[in-house]
Image (cartoon, rainbow, N blue to C red):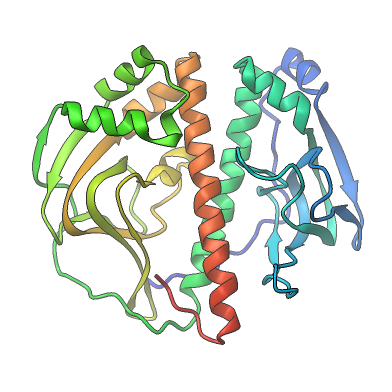
Amino acid sequence: MSAKVQERPKVVSAFDDLTAAERTEIARFVTPFTAGTGTVLFRQDTPEDRMYLLTKGLVEQVTNLPDGSNSVPLTSGPGESLGESVPGDSPGYLATAKVVEDAAGFAIDVERFRELRRRYSPIAFKVLYRLALGLCTAVRNLDAEIAARPARRPGTPVEQAPGLAGRVHALSQGCVGFLRRMPFFEAFEDNELDALCKSMRQWDVSKDQLLFTEGEPGASCFIVIKGQVGVTVERHGHIVALADLGPGRIFGEISLLDQGARSATCRVLKDSELLEIGAGEFTRLFNDGSKASFKLLEAVHWNLLGVQRALLAERTGLQRDGVWVLV
């Protein structure tokens, strides 16, 4: 299968499934907006007071880099979100966002939203879930765009039937300790992390094991404890390497979150220890309505933001050389 840049939808829905009571509650910090072509939604380094979830149109974001040049523009479309930050970011926007095709969607009051997140509000969970879905769309679009470019470093295909194989067992104390040190899980109480660990399986997997292939349904997501996993796509009959994932990296969650097909192929590059959460357990953890469910969604959300940042940095730096190197 050849990777192709996905065609963006013209319009998407965002909060159509909310009840009347939820719509009343959400209206306190989420408001509809429309903006004509040429409108600037926010400027780089100005205070971050709004996030945006697009349902229509296109918005282009450009970052002024320290050397005075501009980044490669990032175009966001329906279903994608923009203006988000991660803990530790400066309080200002990281880019300037300008509408390039009449846009509509929802503006989210950042301070009110953060307050509700701190209280683990159910309505904040629903908004955060939609922002996470927007990041899934953005990451898929970036993956497809990068994969469609010429590359200098092709991956090496290894013929092997997909399907996880290796030694599986309950989580070791070492793995549990590793999770406790991961920034994604630092908000979890001990009992919450223990419950999460009980939903996981630990795999000892040998080099060259194929974990899943591009285009297949998502059955689980993984955390790398030891070793290395390679991410590739097939383009014009050639295998292209996108990333090498080491300890602490989460992968495979996008297809579980948005119910789409796998956007890439993942294979073990070095003998590895992996933690797996199956699709059923992933869904159950997200739907139990607990604080731990909210914290898991936040962990996934921060991870997706990190993935998007890494792809954007790679994309910006590589296009300057005139050739896209996929690593």
